[in-house]
Image 1 (cartoon, helix red, strand yellow):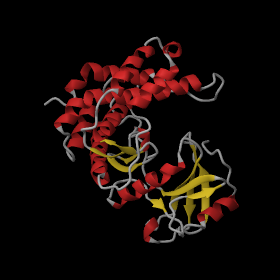
Image 2 (cartoon, rainbow, N blue to C red; image 1 turned 180 degrees about the vertical axis):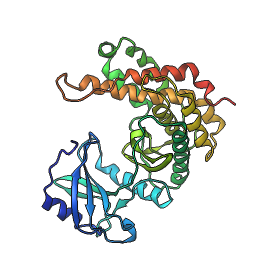
Image 3 (cartoon, rainbow, N blue to C red; image 1 turned 180 degrees about the horizontal axis):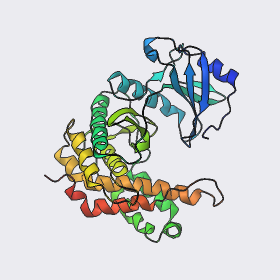
Image 4 (cartoon, rainbow, N blue to C red; image 1 turned 60 degrees about the horizontal axis):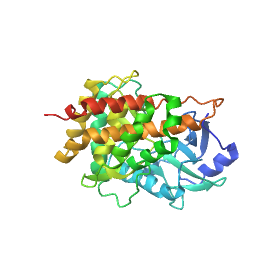
Length: 327
């Protein structure tokens, strides 16, 4: 279970009492997630507009991989997007108006609970829906006043792979060292002329909640940053449009891009660079997975994620990416 810090019933009740959401009824640890402690919290509810009369919330204690200096950006972005009608969870502010508090020496935030389930094998209609929602998010975020640099840009991916080294990468798969040169090529790519907004940059299906074909929630914004909208689309495309064997699902791929462009048309520059951007997006996950694979002890009770999954997707974009936005 992904609860690293124990909070007793009295501690939880005291914390919830700092918010105008009613009294604590129950709190259950959430197994999903590997970086933070999370609870599903139920309260008696207050009926106040901030909580929409709701009684269920997600309480998060930020354990690692989060720079507290970034929390104002992450949480304010949620409030900005929610205020514009995007399906994202609103941050609950405490009685002092703060969006997060310190608990046991760690930052804590209470966030609105949203209904829905994450698709395990997205349908084309679901892919089209997420494309449209992503485009709406980009438009809604264009006037967000804060910025955050992308800590996982193409240069960072190249640096991670270089640190791993060809010899160690080869212990994972003989084909992996070839990604070193490709990552250097991606790092040299100039995206400065592309349209920019605030971007999620990690919109895998497990970060999306749906009821049928309708998107009810986008969650886990802790890689969000200011950057090219086309990169966010490429990450989402690479995450949604391949099956378990890494075969490209053309129906989902076409639907996702169609959904996005039904709201926001890509510029000619974005269309021309999309194959290269998609390859760079794949290399981000090649790099992070390779690093985790090599740094995880053999006896650790953790299932490693295979970096070759995204190396194979890189190959698809290399071979066929130019045809994705043709016409």
